[in-house]
Image 1 (cartoon, rainbow, N blue to C red):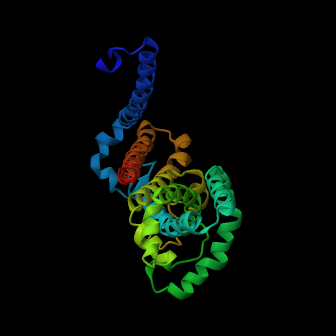
Image 2: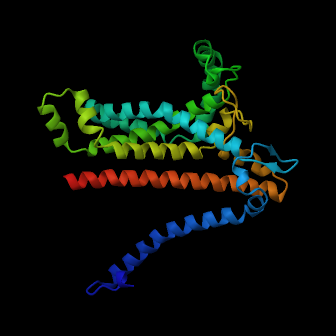
Length: 312
């Protein structure tokens, strides 16, 4: 290949190029192999249920009737609820750390926020069971039912475990991703942008709103997509607090189920080939959604850094 046979390039440099090229290609190969194996090992439900599997609502392992819609619903609703809570909090923290906080506070606080992402998910699940679930059952859900009970989202018995609790746990887990990426994006905005708007008499808030946030919009959206991908694939913490009931209910107080949770809970109990391969097909759907979300996020983050480099 011309890439490795340029005139004047030393053998060591050619070896280095070939090595890193192989490493880069191996990532694509591994991704392709994973997708192939998931498709190959979910052949039975694909042939039996087809596309109807995605909107089927029955989950009956005894009768071998399977539908993925309750799990898709639980995954998307819990992730959306997590983003609804985490995005304003994460963006507010990122703005404070990058624009308002002094350096002696900003760097240690950012380090502590990033440490939250390193906490194992099972720890979040334990905190959710012993701290969050009782508080949601005894305080939050009765309060929401008493004030917003006229809405279908806030009706029902206060179980404690359910979609609302899962959303709160997921929000706590994805906030560090939003804060970390958004802070770096905001700090990458050229200081000339800030100085120009401040010289016109703008306040700090107007400076952030007019000169900083529009410039970093694509990167912030990228951080949101990364957080969404993290929420979609979370398993243990959600499994411990969501209730694990494969039903579609409009109320956030009701238990639900997610794609990752059903795989973790039922894979070892699957007794038939169709049952096992159905769980693998759910993993295939989750894999496809996660890959798509991560790809969009990476493209958005890349575009904002390219724009910063060009303008500088």
